[in-house]
Length: 280
Image 1 (tube, one colour):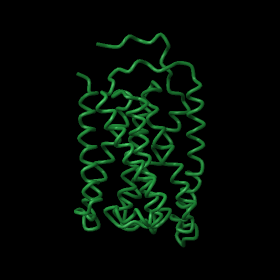
Image 2 (cartoon, helix red, strand yellow; image 1 turned 90 degrees about the vertical axis):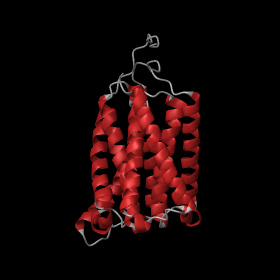
Image 3 (cartoon, rainbow, N blue to C red; image 1 turned 135 degrees about the horizontal axis):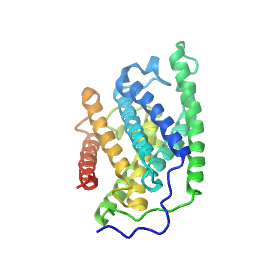
């Protein structure tokens, strides 16, 4: 049974949000190609050298999911169905610029090649600007007239609890890895440097924030459809990247077992969510 339609018109997505989504889709595509398609070439094609290549593929998979999220968000007309594309990216940008400034000496600002040198400056400028841009657009959007339509497909309590638990796991581990990469890094299923540990941590925190927003704030399958699809894509890309560089992964370590189990669970949940939100 359909919920009663609200008397307050649904708040539409502002053009500024669509512009942001369009720009982020392009940037995400460039990062995805550079890191996921060419993970072994970061010394000459990226802002800093990432080793081993499985780490580059892991970070690239995150950008692959992000560009998909922004592309889907661009198509949304109602703000309630598009705002899932803000929480995770904002957290990612804040922790990424922090990691960048903490390890600024690792970036290719003085590289001999023009491409990595330009890449380093683009990376720095983008992540210095993105947090403020996201906040400014979010504030302007929230001030637009209108409200949220009723939830069409509420997530059951069990699903919300599962999302909250996933968020706690990802955010908790991500914060620990970011704060103490030397101590927590060895628990990861492949080798990480302090910079790559914090870059991975930024993505884990962002994914955790997205899960928390989905389960605790939106609590609706329709509102979270785009993020669920992006989450599933990220998990699939993570697994593919790990399989491509299987020799670099400690599969039977506790971290490897937990990560694979978590990714398979995310994929299963994403498939179930897609079936729920598919038109009858």
